[in-house]
Length: 283
Image 1 (cartoon, rainbow, N blue to C red):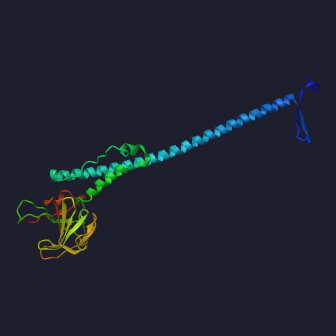
Image 2 (image 1 turned 30 degrees about the horizontal axis):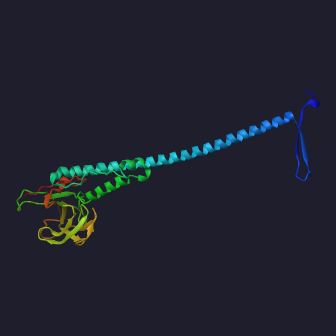
């Protein structure tokens, strides 16, 4: 087609007052090219805008998945910790139950009632954070803190063992422990101090009532570090080892443990039993 025969298109801009009118004259081919380019740009802009929205939504989901993954990792860690605590608790209760038999009023199994907050919801809902499960275990652990399991001193020798044969002349309701002089005597479980004073047989004596049928006695001390009525934690110092009263044949601690008024042999159940030089004296 000759240039003179090519179609032209005029584009005019006319203000309302008619002044300053503008006019552009382009060929129909160029106009169509401009129009195609314009719609192509609109198409790419629309694709870019949709892509930005999609990427924004995807980024939000990725962040949400990361947060959920972090919460699941934390929940897994907590569950492992809870499982270990439960294993220790069950081992401790099983040990005490074997030793004391049916006479021991052990805490019951951890039971969760159905409701708005149970184990399942705690596991499924990260915000639950095992609150109910952790609280239940904490309650059971609080009960076990009142059961004597801690050695009252760092023992290196037992000079007299537990004897309970129903003969007041030969029975020895406790163990005599030799340790370093002036070391601290600690309570085997938490409880209330119900006696601090001089005993004819046990010298300076401390008695702790643990409030659950358990009671422990600590005799032949050099000095008291607590008073009657004090509430002590498990492992808290209550006296100084190393008494030299006339009733004692040498510096040692007499440690006695009773459950519901019945004497119990401490060597059967004290935790982390050290290797001791057990010297059986003549009875």
